Length: 180
Image (cartoon, rainbow, N blue to C red):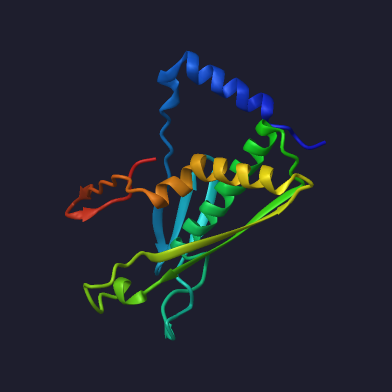
């Protein structure tokens, strides 16, 4: 039997209202370059591989040992949208049989390869197409979409500027991986 997340949602809301200090959570990913352009990420008890595609812009680049990091950003958006749809559909009492998201991001590789400073290295735009299987009315589905788009953390990160600070940890004159 599928889990209905309404009770969990209501319990989380109540807890965060009563103890707002517990609302601020830190998520951490530890990555390290493994070979060539490939990386391994450790997130809690999970391991993810990342690499550049073997062919990029008609040129041999990576070894294709995993998704491109930019593709992982797209996957994060899709997965976050799906989970947020499930969470809010259950909470709002909107029946949802299935949800999937196809996310496409367009990037101008001249930014990555320093061809010109006038092109940023990140996505130019991202398009997410959400496919929903539900007997609910179009009005309920539209209300659900508005709610999900307002409360999806990854969508918020991509739509709004999030301060990012980078620093170096040097060992014997060379950077070392961050401690676990």
